[in-house]
Length: 207
Image 1 (cartoon, rainbow, N blue to C red):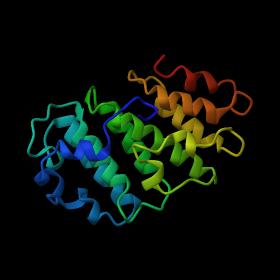
Image 2: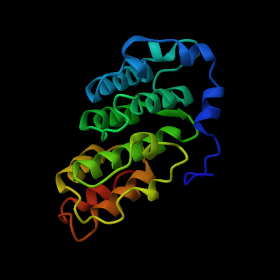
Image 3: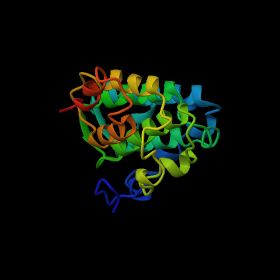
């Protein structure tokens, strides 16, 4: 069982989907066609649009309500983020921004927490790498069975304050709480390193 108390693995999620859903190539969203982090961000935007409308290439073959995120959506996000072309690169700001948009768009969740786990790991991967701190490959860092504590920075020393302030601005005023992300950002921030005017806006997210 992982830190979220989830028992469903990526393989179990994929077993719940038909082979046609997973194997059917759908243009830019298909991970094998992702060439760089910019195209990965574009592919995530297609997933976002499908969540918002309930329609589109990532929702084919199943009932999908608007503003809902299910296990198939979470798998699409994971497959895009860990595509071969970007697997060894840090999560980019554009990818992180689109993940925030997906998180905001999905009012209803039926993915057993998989997206929240992926979202938190991807954001911390971006924050750490943008600060020049070492991070593992995405295939390791974002895997459902990799505890984030095994690689995330444990202190704020060396963490780029601009990156943390950007994450804080993205989190501010949102109605949906990701407590794993809140806890990790608070750890990264460190009360002694972030300006007092900014710290409350980080820690008050979702409270």
